[in-house]
Image 1 (cartoon, rainbow, N blue to C red):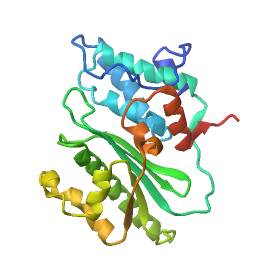
Image 2 (cartoon, one colour):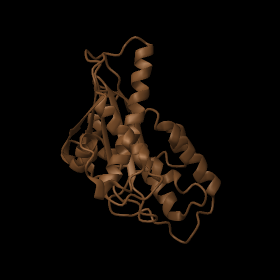
Image 3 (cartoon, rainbow, N blue to C red):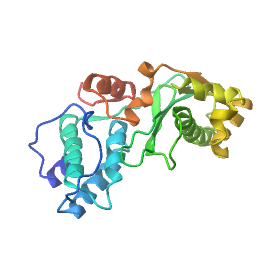
Image 4 (cartoon, rainbow, N blue to C red):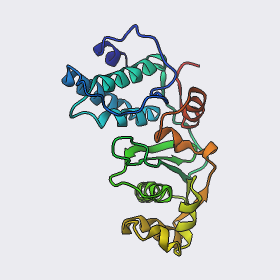
Length: 259
């Protein structure tokens, strides 16, 4: 992190409490950034940092969407992430011994959140016991026509990830054989997983999203509703205010190494 700040010439910058602003949108301005190679190097290094810093995932994913032609606004967004890093230089992902081997995962989406192409952003966080072991923040490939569809796509993403985690644990002889619990904050999406009747709203949902329903029917997964207030994957889909961001970062076990 110190090397990254040094390369950007920001070792003495002022720190910020969040990596992304809730007020400015990511619409690129007309004026291109005069050193795109520098932008790509910094953002590429930030991608490596997300391996131990899930709290940066959303902001870095957004920066990566402008690699081909970054603008001055994009560079300003990158500098904001670096100023956040400056204030959290001792932070990292904490892994502790856990008595539970149950898998539970949170999935969320920010419906039509991108102001450029109106695609949604999916996010998920997978826990093994009390430890975060897998996470993702990614723009969806297609435009969702409803918030239920966007959430269902996010559920399909996390279902594929949890299926892989379960198969890995089985090979290691560590799987508890309990069904994995998936938490979603959209009632429509949770009902859809158990009840295949919502025809009018779901005719346009592509077939692979029904992968989730098969997993629920076979008893591999249990899908539960969680209120937006308790949705941990919220931090992976949109910019948040300082207090909310700090609360969710703590729940993802991203903490300072210096007590």
